[in-house]
Length: 335
Image 1: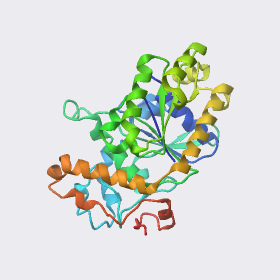
Image 2: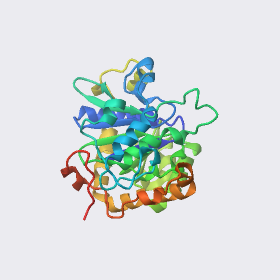
Image 3: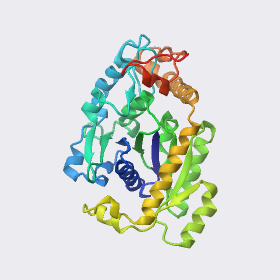
Image 4: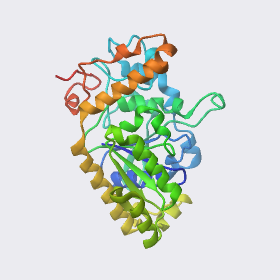
């Protein structure tokens, strides 16, 4: 299952991402978390101190090695240098599983110890470096995340949780279509629900599963406001949490001490995400992947690389869980 948390800046999407990761890990569900926000806060929210979080290896810094690994023996890709963020897999590509060891995870994934024996893998895009300032954009940093998502074959009982950038920036690429379920975190304010409306409008034609998590809800008036503004898309709400306040101070109690109402809310989120699996359509997923690759190729990729990137699309290939039966790293076209 591939899950994204989105929302306006300050809505609490990183906090709720981290709570959901802790919930999954406590339930012994394999989970890989990715901080895809340039403001890197997911590591500290999972209990890392600031220095350790800042020292995490950045996906963007390992992009050439990631490309070379994923390219594998795909005859449609002449070199890793011709791969861009939207490059889709095909026959001969190496695919990623959530529960495995591979060079990408070895280079970029850090295992975070949570309560007891609970753990989660964490990867980060990395912040802007000094050389990026004034010349790079956010989307140049998350290209590695999108490329990995394109090559990921995940199952039902394992989770990828991505803490996305604030607002609707993810619509500058096709990454918003890479998820089984997108949870939009909204405060009970006009600005909070404005992001929801924008996100729903952009996602309307792409079959994106979207549910709203109300955050910082302090009473019936806040709840009524959210119900009036987002209707049936409102899944669950979170209110004040002494546990979260302690976590933000760097002194989280054991996760089992999170307020019961918030534990129940996380179970609702988990159940809703699990149900989204029933709507998974690998053919549509692959079509959207190739659609955005062709669009990026024609708009800028061909010119930048000097190659015909549309020719990288393998028309006989459909990404699916059937490929999990193939040897690790071997992409096989579907019938």
